[in-house]
Length: 133
Image 1 (cartoon, helix red, strand yellow):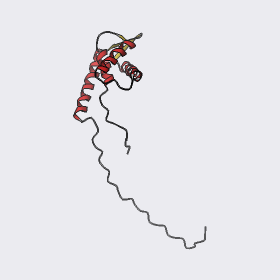
Image 2 (tube, rainbow, N blue to C red; image 1 turned 120 degrees about the vertical axis):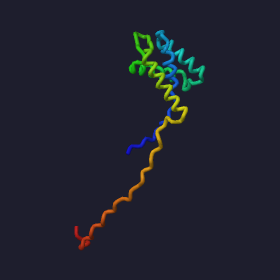
Image 3 (tube, rainbow, N blue to C red; image 1 turned 90 degrees about the horizontal axis):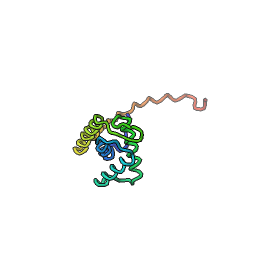
């Protein structure tokens, strides 16, 4: 039985949600302009933590994941949101946020396993000659 000891209760991904909301506008963005908008919005919501460079790296990684998942399209150096993909992402994020707020986001508690008494093997008969090898 595999058990996981890692931290499994993650909150909503504010960076990805803000990225999706900015990309849902019909205009294409270069990364620098996109970062400036997302960073300003996150700072206004007091959700930008970890420093500007770390946020830039996280946002770039999320943006590349959005392109791979089909939520955004890259043309040259510009990124544009795909409306249908972003709609799906935002609805899924809203559902997960609702579950997180309700406290039903984590797995159910693990049922304890009742230990079974080990089978004890019969002791082997002692040899008659104590000194023989």
